[in-house]
Image (cartoon, rainbow, N blue to C red; front, side, top):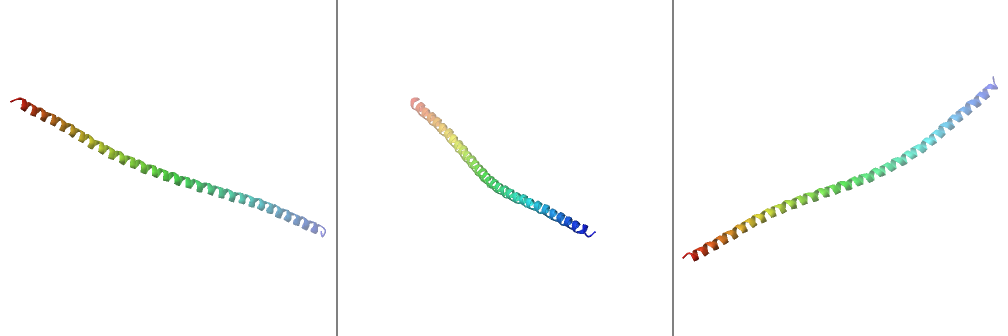
Length: 114
């Protein structure tokens, strides 16, 4: 029995060392995985920051385009108003010419009649 005890104790120590070695290897490999995960997290964070910058830039471009479209719309409205005024003036001018021609005809008719 006494000779079996050191043998069992030796087996117990070997088993404990083996288990400790397995746990240590597992922890080291888990640490590698954690390091890799941390690197991936950093890469994903950088990509998201770049995409956020891109989205902000796209938003700014969209706002600028909307402002430009509103400016063009306002210019078109002003242009439409100017065209309406010019057309009204052209009609008034044409009517004035017609009135002048009619007045000249009337004067000519009065001058010829007597």
